[in-house]
Length: 312
Image 1: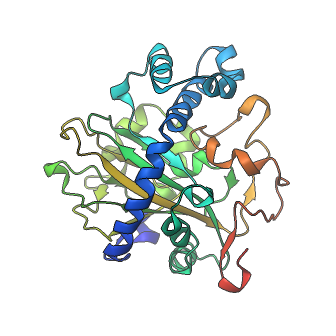
Image 2 (image 1 turned 60 degrees about the vertical axis):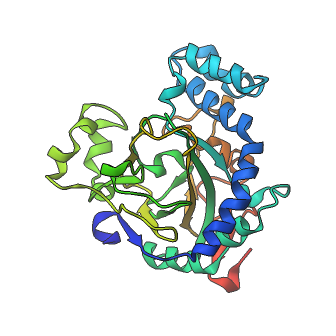
C-alpha cells in the first residue's frame, strides 16, 4: 500500500500505554509553549504577505509580539481569522531539555520507528528530521491539501512521516478529523511541475486521480499510526462541529534518507526561500545554515537513528 498509494496504516503499532504516557508529558509542555506556536503562525503569514516589509522582517516582527492576543490581532490584520487556523503546531519536543517529556525523546530516537522508516523508504541509513505536536482546537478550520516535502529543506524523494493520534479517531461521518490522502499523488510529478503548489487543479483532485482516490484510515484506535510519503498530498477536515473542550492532539515523527542533501536555497537572507513553503522554518532554522548545501552532512539536531550502530 505505501509504495503504490503513498500512504498506509499500521494498526496497534505503538502500545496504548506508551501513547497515554506520551500525551501526559507532551500536552502540558505544549501548553507552556502556546505563545511560541502563535508566533510561528504569524511568521508564516508575514513571510507570505504581499507587503515587502513584512516579508523581509517576518521573524523579528513575530518575535516582538508580546502575547497571544497580539498574535491574533496581527493574523486578523493579515486576513486570517482565529477560526481559519487549522491547528497550533509545536516542533521538536525531543530536543527540549526542559520539556520533562522523556517518552517523546525515546519514541523519536527509537530503532522501532527508525527501522520501519528504513524499510518503507528503502533507505539503509535514516535520519530523524523533526517531531511535531498538532493541537486542533474546537472550531479550528480545515488543513488544506499539501505535501510535507515542500516545507522541508531537503532535495529528496525519500522522506516519511508517522502520524500518531493521541486519542481515538472516529470516522469522518462521526466527526473524525484524521488525515485524508490522495492515492498516487506522491508519484505525480506533473501536478506540481505544471501547476505549482496551489491553484484550481487542487480543487479537482478526484477528477484528476479518479473516483475513490481520496482515502483515509479512519476509524483509528489509540496505537494506530498512519504513514505517508513526503510528497503525498494530504489534508484534514476542520473541527467546526467539535464540542468545546474536546480538543484533538496528534504527534508526528518525520524521518529522511540519511544521504539527503540540503538545498542551497533552503533558507536565504531574511528567512526567505526561492522555492517551497515556510511552514517548517521554525523546525530547521537552528541547524540548516550550519551544514554545507549539496553535501552529505552530519548534525546533532538531525541525528542518524538507523542503523543502530551508526547512531549519533
